[in-house]
Image 1 (tube, rainbow, N blue to C red):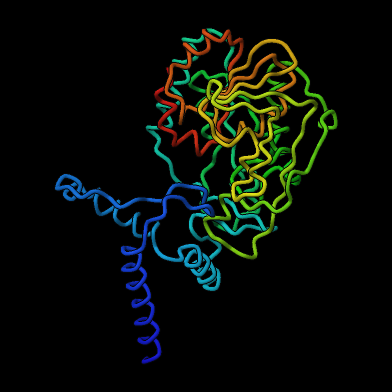
Image 2 (image 1 turned 120 degrees about the horizontal axis):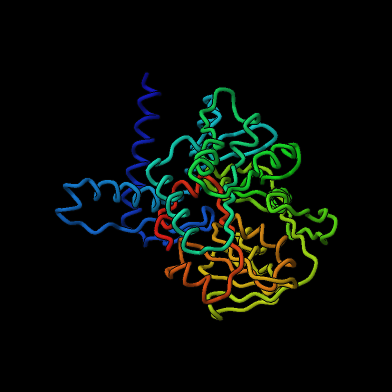
Length: 364
């Protein structure tokens, strides 16, 4: 009894000391491990206090700025695994070393607004527009999840988009047919280049065309020590390392944000020595990107970061590929398409991102 009280007392003392020191030490603005901005000290106001916003913001701030936060995340993960849990920090510890992001809830109103916005955009564009909603590993690799793990059926999102009249690409079957292959990273929420190729093949088939075999591209391992965003949520030192592979036929020049930065490759290799290695594909998340291709016509991809890997397979098919990330782009997409002579549009998102992205509903 005394030992339990002593342990509890020490734990509370550590939490108190951490909280106090967190208020004294300079705030950090970015977590390299989690690859995200950290919450900053909230501004107090009577309105925020009575609305509950101040308390919520303060809680996020204290959690993000807690000293040695990464070590605490690891300790929490170990404690939960030791207690028999197979989930920590919104991550399932799945079979074969997979860390799979949990997807159990979403805002239905936001998702429906996003679908409606795409229908409105399609009418404005008056050019072919296909929608590719990509399921995450939680769907395709559901047989690897812990027994009885809660998990939304992502196929229902595609079914709803179809029912509302969007011209969708069914990539579920293509990914499911190859689920025994390395199509999702084990420590990151993205699909691998191989998974992107499977989706590319499904897109080509939906257009009545055939995809070249993947052997038509040169392959190059860019790194074999990648640990991604899912790993960052649990900081498990025993997690496996992933391999990032590039596929290309020729090199392509790339223009980011109307000439703010230009490159002679789809791959920004400077990221391979940092903590955000997935950013090697198309220089991370940019508002606007133009890839000079070697084919004909112009393709516009409205996207999240899944498209950064996908783009390497379409780069040789068009004269130009334009990519716009609605989370960062503030202009009119329909006006952009007209001004740049776009012939075809592809909307490419992973399903959880699409269901939550408030920027999609603002597309015009």
